[in-house]
Length: 101
Image 1 (cartoon, rainbow, N blue to C red):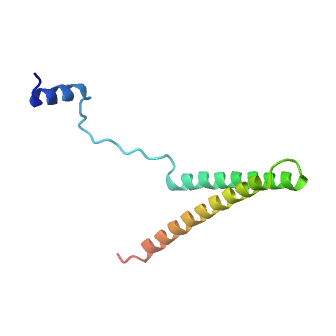
Image 2: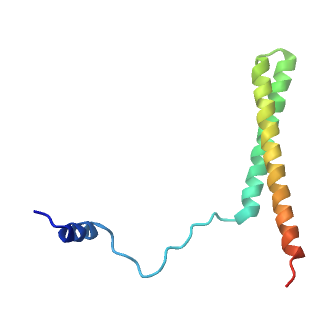
Image 3: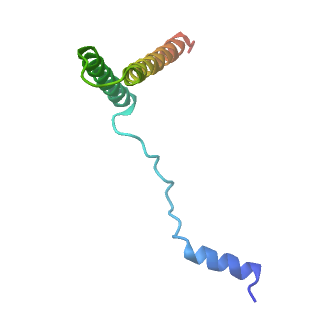
């Protein structure tokens, strides 16, 4: 028969030993600037793809109207998202600069 005290001991034996130092938070390299730069690169790629699809559509080469509209909306939404992030970051910076020390 397993008692509750024995069950706790067997579970704790299966766990890895505890470390004395707290775990270090994992942070992306480069921080916000690099993350924002990658987002801008992705937005640029989406807009270039949308431009290519529109050019193909105008030339009568392939994509349907709904494919053109989907690509254009994806590029538009990605751009609006980046603009909103920029605006919020700028507003946060301005709030910090207005703080009294």
